[in-house]
Length: 105
Image (tube, rainbow, N blue to C red; front, side, top):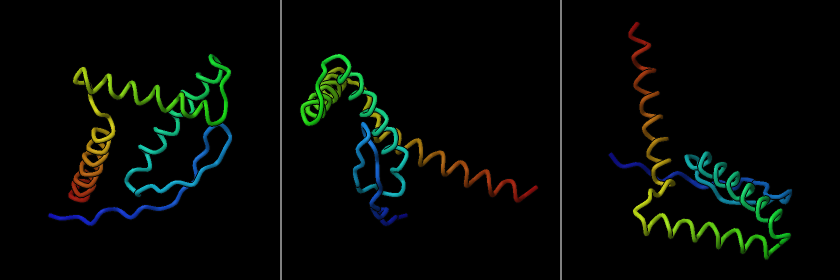
């Protein structure tokens, strides 16, 4: 069973009070929102502890997140993005099956 890839749509996100337009596939909206929340939280924490701002703050945050990813990969950690996609796909399938079961009763 082959599926066509979901089309990307432009959506607006806000990080530290600034709005950005990004591309997001329909099925990836939850992952995008989780990513925005993570980056927002990390940037706020870094801003408080380092007093950095602007581009420097963004670069420091990106480096910290990249470092954590490499540490997880080096120690056999789990890559959460594909895992979340798989969970969302499974949840959708379960809802489809349950919906059809409700029609039987």
